[in-house]
Image (cartoon, rainbow over all chains, first blue to last red; front, top):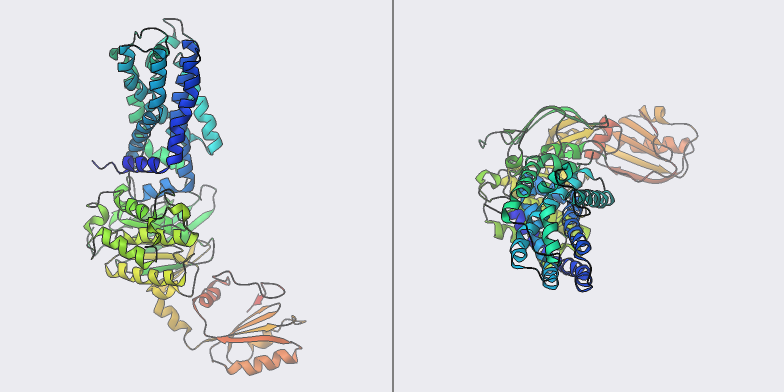
Length: 240
Length: 338
């Protein structure tokens, strides 16, 4: 299998050195004072989860909008790259890049929060799951938005809305629709893990608890790839 | 695709934009492999629309289109790999060098599927190297595209399109932004691609150089195909004809169209406020009587030009609209025509 779009994304990210360094430093600059400042785990973990999710949605939506507007996406598609391949590889590459850029921040959170062994074990899979979902949402946001400003607004609103649904800002009562929804949303395990990592106590989450959110993320991935020709058409909007 | 299949086969192909504006009136078109075709027309005539339809960038709202033997419908990725398209806007990955950009657009799709295994004389790397040198980009090929001028970006776009082993090459306004060396390289490379069996279709409103490379000319006007003929036949129709342009210091009090039209050898007269344009089938003969008549009518002559008419003049005759943006004659523009 030829991963031309995946390798192109990495090549571009590493060439934009300033942006890459900023993407490493900005999360650290936010996380360090919170981790070392003795913020309560509940507030700290909410901030971290918002940071991670918006990092993913913005990082996916804004470049797509920029390249769609500038004509680069259209050029790639007209070269014969299938829309599904373009989206699948781009989202995967962007998720992997986000993970690399957020990794130092994640280490700081867990290091200063005194995270336990289970938290360390689950941190990477739940972060990947959360970032993958955020990146997929970014693609949909780019397809709906008609400008960068709209993209930023929609990415923030969609991310925050789903974070609310994931129980990041409040704990839903057991048995309610909110509680059931929370089990499905991939941001919930990310929040729970970051809560534990921030010193909020031992992690009760197990790998079996990731099955539902992972399935939801995979369904979103498959649907996004299946409708990618429509999404790309909307993002690139041929002039005329 | 069988090598004998037409590169382009359009039947009643047309496009209406969602706004209701007609982009292209239904047209029939067949272009063979190896043919070099230029589409001429002023801005908004439908040149780019036709080219984008052939590039599968736009979907036709009427008619059918078959490219390289494959009907254009549904999944287009495989077909698109057989088409090289350079639009009128040079878009690149700005942080990457020119060479990297060219290499990326080569390697985005698998080489074995690229152009149906179309035979070319030189391998990818050597072809890119040769093209970068031909367009004088070899020195700048290791520099990020963000540092390129507009002309260099245009050249890189052409290098990328001409380096692909495709059977169909579509170039929108290929000579725009090029220096004379670039235009010369473009002419050579278009000839080379044609020699390799690729159909090359260009859209342009430049009438001095680009059409002279083509074997066939399409005139588009307001979305309509108004002429489709071999270049030699069009030029043959202009042979022995003369265009006389007389600039006046002041416009005449009354229109001299009728009197001028009655002069021997005069075929067509166009009078703008300060300019008289006369087409003649008899080189030079009407000049003296033209000048005499204008002087008699009180005209003060500033300049006289006598030349052979070209494709632009033919387009003007067919449509009444200039093909290229022409400088506005002193004192106004459109006048009466007979």
